[in-house]
Picture 1 (cartoon, rainbow, N blue to C red):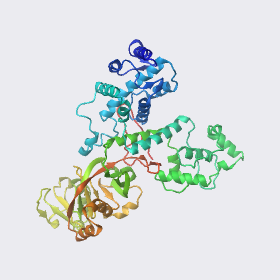
Picture 2: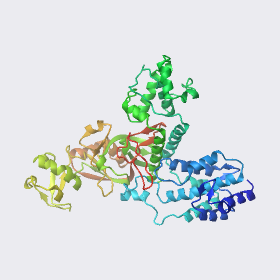
Picture 3: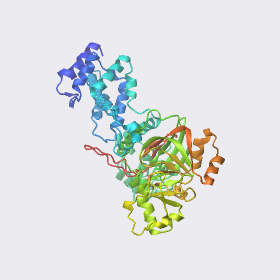
Picture 4: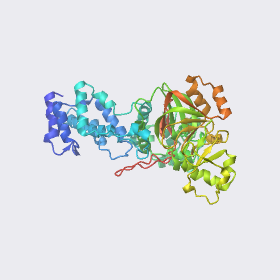
Length: 554
């Protein structure tokens, strides 16, 4: 586009057009755009030769991914933008309209990112450690600030770099973008509809819905590629009732039969959805298969936003807990060096999302029972069984000051004791009965949340492990302790000796390690497979005053 033609076309949309651009879109930031394009000589920013440039393509993709969860009433006009881009011609005014609309959307998007307004569940995540990442800037970034940064990047030839910085650079975020695209394509194809089954399907069964099941499994990435040559596009678009009529007419060809390939695909689907790997389309599997791709796209986009909780540099070595997956990984140089199951807080006692640093490991810990747990659990136990405290190695102190006077357990009449007025501190001695087990990994916070061993190992056998009072219990505490202390010449023998002696010892890490307690119900694993888990904390049920995303209960 010649510079003079470009100038005239952009000036038309900014000054001479009616109040709307491209037919029916009103500009949100007309004054700011006037300043921007004047400084830039009224030349296109996002277009080169009637095509989106690299920065423009990146911006459109970022806008689409961000708006896909429909959490907010986003004002990017992404549907209209995509429609206009798809029919983009060599008409200068058309290209100029797209450029102006993209700049308008960019201002809105950049403000949301820079002011930390794209963090779902932010109302819940109020721990001080989280504010290091999630807090809005002391002074709100304005639309004029955004224009200034954009102008500066244009002058320096760094437009693409500026746009790229608006999305998380974490590999976990980038992996999810491909799956978001997949489910949006399925939804947009118009070919998806739910399976209508009145029975379980297992190996050897025949059913009219099997072709649709096979198509669905391939679309989701679970069915072996290249085995659907018989499934023609016209067949894909058939109404289920037509397939059923064909099946009932006696034309029960192999495509209506559940074969080994389908069973393998079902098992693959079940595994990455956290279901029992049976190869049978049972009720739970059918429910998961029938989650509309539109809703899955929303859910993936929402989980992508959760990567915005994290700092850009997480460190070369850190502990990452995904609470929705009940799993902890010790990451070093982007690879998991140690992985284990965890138990997290119950739904009503949620473990908070938290970003902090572990600098101390306590071997053979005592347990200073938090007031809320003493009130809810310990005191009722003492009332029910007068010997409970003694049997479980508890001592009682007058208060939380140190030192504090010890109160003989037998001096307290638990019968009429009102737990709401409790001022005592309950302390459990080290040993096999200790609820913290043999190791505690201290996380600085005001909610008494930390990682620890447990004296109830049997709970790790359950798939749903939201069972604690808020702390995170780890499956392999001794291995984790050794991994963190190995650089300080603490071997397994020395660690075990301290534990066996039941003498509490706090060991300070010479190299404190970051720990991130996160919550992702969807993520892509190292094998490139989309993993989906139940929303145990109902954190996918997010909304603001103007818009709501219905939770997909899986």
